[in-house]
Image 1 (cartoon, helix red, strand yellow):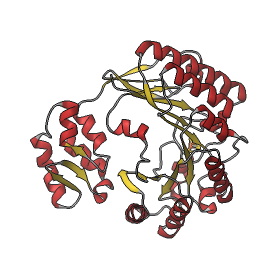
Image 2: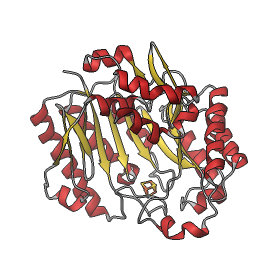
Image 3: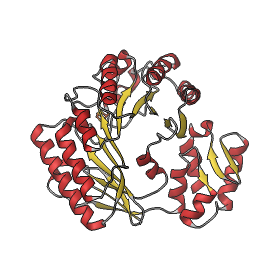
Length: 367
Ligand code: SF4
């Protein structure tokens, strides 16, 4: 049996960013403690049920760092014990650079954390303010310094494109900041206005760059990061050699993962299931709901085409035992002629231009 990736969802944030539709909310200390106890209980019960070993652990949210170093260390210790996670595993914790407990990174390092993912979004304070982010640039710089001095070298920064009043110059200054901090990984996401968020209500007043401007920013980001040693390996992800996110690669390679926590999804033994979006329900022992079967050709192709390596013939044969079907190759031809993808003996890979319209291309190829 292959090793799985283990994901733990911590749904708490100090405040709600106006663009965010993740399952996260403000909470009190008692709720956070009860939730952490429920995570440890569920880890133990899932370990007994599936009997699997994990080689990546990812604590995401929300803002896991809000739990503080001691509680996070307790959760990590429980996960390591129950899922036989060894010292070579990739263990990531998402952190918000604002209001971090003193000494948290030393505690995380001692617990085995090897990677920190920080929500930067922009290095320009005025842009960060518009996004509802609290920390300023100097605070972020000092957080990165603290992570490194605790001995954690694998740092990922999240950057956002297409933010209100954003342009290529402001994006370049954000990327320059990331490069100057010598982080190992950068994720660059295009802002999407999600239903039900404050940004949706304000949409008409936000002065958002248009689609062409956002496309230019995306292409600029890909080239600029590439020229500074950050190789693109997925639509939105760039890494220095060997620093690709091993946990997230499991999703895109359609490998197995187990999610613990409210709103966390899993894919184990060909089945998909998830915990409902209710922290209270999770604390009270609500069980995961089934979400059908997974891992067929369509799903595998959809996930793999997000990667720069694309849908690879050799990997597809190993995974599903077939070659890329003729009808998929045929549909790929017209996109290849227009420079949106490459279709050759190795497989099918989207180009950067193709990544900009990946949803359209991928759904046409797989249906
Ligand atoms: S910190 Fe992250 S998860 Fe929390 S509200 Fe902001 S974007 Fe959402």
